[in-house]
Every structure is written in C-alpha cells, then in structure tokens.
Image (cartoon, rainbow over all chains, first blue to last red; front, side, top):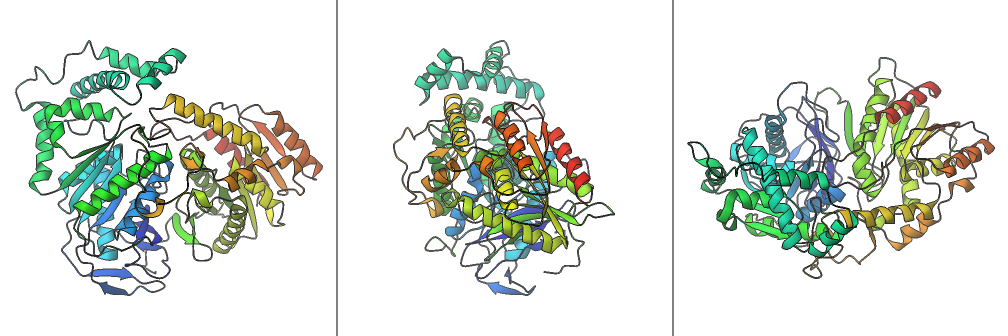
Length: 333
Length: 284
C-alpha cells in the first residue's frame, strides 16, 4: 500500500491522495500533476501505471478493476471525520482497490472555482474529473463512490448521472431522495423526520437511558427539539400532494434508475443520525427493501473509535462482496 | 513528472526519508516574495480536523503578503503515514525539523518562521529553541502544562459523550477485528475520536514550557484566546530568555469544545490576520 499526492482538474486545481494497493504500486510514488481531463465518458483502455521518476507508463493486468472515490463529508477535508477516510482508504487498498480521496473545489486543499456553478452541479463535475484522472493514471473504467453526509448526496447524484459508477456507499445521507427543489416539501420532511427522530431516540434506541439523563441535566438540543415540535403544525408532506407521482414515488424512481442499470447501493446509518428517520419516513415500507446497515450506538461523525472500526468494516465487507475485482491482495500492505 | 502545465499555487507532496510526511507547499502570490519561509504546525486529534481550514486560510493570507508556506501533517496525523498509535512527541519534533529543511529547499529561503496552534505551537517552541535559523515563531495557545492539557482533553471527551448520540462502547458487544490496517490493535484510551497511547500520554504529561531553556526564535508572538495566567508567565519566561515577545489576547471562548457535524470547522479570521500582519512586520 502506498500513498501519492495528486493535483488534477486544471481549473480549479483539485487536490487529493491516491492510495495504491501494493500490487499496483511498488516503489516510491512522486506527486503527480494531471492536466484538465475530459469529463465525458472514456472508452475502455489498457491500464497504465505512473512509474516513479519517469513519465513512462507500463501496462498492468488491471483493466476494468474498479476504483473507489471518497467524497468530502461537508467541509471537512479529505481525511474525513476523525481520519476515518484515511483508515477506509488504507483498508480498501489492502483488499486490492485503488482509492482516491480528494477535496472538492474550495474545500480542504483544493482551490475554489472561479465560476458560479452551484455546488451540486460542480461536485458531480469534479467527481467526473476525478474518474477521468484515475482512468489516465491506472486505466480505471468503473468506480465506486463512498461519501458521508453531503458526500453521500453527491455520490447518489453522480451515480445517477454517470454510468461509469457501478456502486455507491451512502453514509448518513439526509434529504437526498426527494425533489429538493420543492422547498416546502423539504421543510415538511425535515420537521417530520426530526419528530420521528426524537421519538425513536427516546423510546426505541440504545440511547434511551442516556436521553433521560440528558433531559434531567438540561443537555437536550432545545432548538432542534423545538423545530421537531413545529412539525406537528405542518401538514404531513407525504399526504395530499397535488397531481403527480408524490415524493415517495419520486424517491423510488430515483433508486430504480440505479437498479435498472445494475448499480449497487448501500445506505449506512448511525443510530443517532436523523437521516435514518428521513429515510424511513420517506420510503415507508419500501425502506426495508433497500440494502441498509445500521450501526447502533454511533453518532453522525462516528466519534467513538469502536464505531469508526465498525464503519470501516461494513464498507470493506460490502465492497469486497459486491464489487467484482480479480486483482485483490491477499494480505495487508 | 513534467507536464508543461503552470506550477499550481498549492502543491501537495510527500517528503522525508521514504516520504512518510504529507505537505502542501503554497507559492508566494506577491510580486516581491520574501526570503523567509513559513512552516505551519497543526494541532493534533480533533483539533487538527476542526482547525485544518484555519491553517489553510492562514497559509493563503501569508502567500498574499509574499511568504512561501509549507503546511504539513505530523507522523500518524492527516495524510501522513502511520496512525494514532504511532504518535510521539520526539517523532513530531524530528518531523518539524524535516519540514523546515523541506520548506527552505523548496523556497530557497535563508530563514524560516514557524506558526503553530496548541500542541503544534508547543512543538514549534521546543524545536525552535534547539535551532539557530528560526527567525520568528507565532505561538497560538501553546500547550504549556501537559498534565493540564490532558485533563482538559479528557473533560472535552466526557462532554462529548454526554452530548452526542454516541455510546462509549458498542451496544452490540465487542466489535470483531476489522479488515486491514485497524485489525488487531490493542485497546487504548481515546480522546475525541483518537487513541492516546500510554507512551504519548507520558510525553504530553511531561510538557512544561515554563522550563524551556532556549528562546524559540528571535521574534515571538504569543496569541491567547482564553484567560490563562500561565500564558502571562510564559511571556515573562520568554523575556528571561532574551526575547521581547508580543503577547496578545483575543477572547474566543469555546474554541476547543467538540461539536457534532461536518461543518463545525473553526476559522477565527482576526487571529489569522493578526499572525499574518505580525509575521509580515518581523520577517523580511
């Protein structure tokens, strides 16, 4: 396993770290600057490896081996909360996967954009630049996206837009499946989901006793609880919608676009995360049909170390079992 | 690898023997670049995550006034090799020495200035005291008393456990050993998402900057964000070492408190501007 600094994307210049599995990158790895890549879909090609101290490339028998991209969690840079992205990348590389964790424009070590493209569109474009860069570096033609929070939302959007993406791991996504352009719907869903969130945490979670103590000691998040209670006054956003498929069907349609293409999707939720309540509220019984792993006792950013280890284990187990890859390593690098 | 592309304003790279350390070199953006490079020293653990953007912004401010800047990650931190079980004060001090050499080599600078936050500031002070080429040191809330620092971190960790929807152990029992680099690690005490091994705990507990024997730099800025009588005593101690430190207080309570969320980074602009203006004034 080796790590290599990477600048790519032209304008803006994006920064990341490639974690090479041992089989792909023996020897020292100098930093690499890759020029502006094409953002279109690239044809399959023979794999290449950047050779240390030279610009020559040699062929490897890794054509089609999927690469993994880790996408920023909010504005935390590419090491992830509590360095979980570093641990995830190294663990996936020990399984034989090439991994890139990089910063979107304006985040972490990447420069800001000089256009006015909204983040949602810019992020998908930058994911495509990252994929083109890995294609140029290692011949990767298929990709797995992994992201936490907003990184999960971008992962889903990019997977819908780009057929090179064959799988995505969405960690604690929230408000990611409905039509977010409908602001009233978004507000209604958020407040309703918060209400479900507090009910679940108080009555049916591993945190029950802890939340009683929090109430007694005044440690409750009162502003958030107040927002949840305001959800009572709003109509149920899942009832009485005007003509059209409705938010639940809209969400299911988005998911079916991916399943029709054979894209594998895993949701991972922390027990303490309100995104879980949004997911269950919006999808109803259909939520049970979606591949989902629940990590009990964990918070949104997986602060306790046991929860970080569990997260990395869930991601690695799922990627290893779900993604065909002939070039796996037999042991940790 | 030569591509014919213009050199980027920020250049990420690995350096050191076997290249274990990750750095970002920021090229000066002024038409009159300075002859002094600045090396930025991150804090550790959760503070590293939350203040990464602050030091990145500090680097940008410094390049605008002509400084070449190197930000880097200590061993076992950020993008550098290793993990939190490898954390050692002595290793980090050696890392800082390598970073100073790398910053001077890349920039061609004759002198170097250090700017550090919390434990990073403590490392800057101790390493600077052993060298002759450190022109200036901006020490932002340096850890003066290691034992008090450990107690503060433990209190923050306990507060996190009280406030967050997180349990200290898995409710499903012990997690099986995970794949890859995390497998088989011994259980160690943890603080806000990072392990604290007993060797590092002992090293931190032994920190006492009031016993520093040499001056960290010719020019020293001491930035204090919460009232602490120890900082004033440290300023007096530095005077006794033959320097005239500038000691400023910028009231910013709660800077170190743990916050849930992926947007809870801290960028205190007034402190960044203060450090930038001060370095621009004392370094050529």
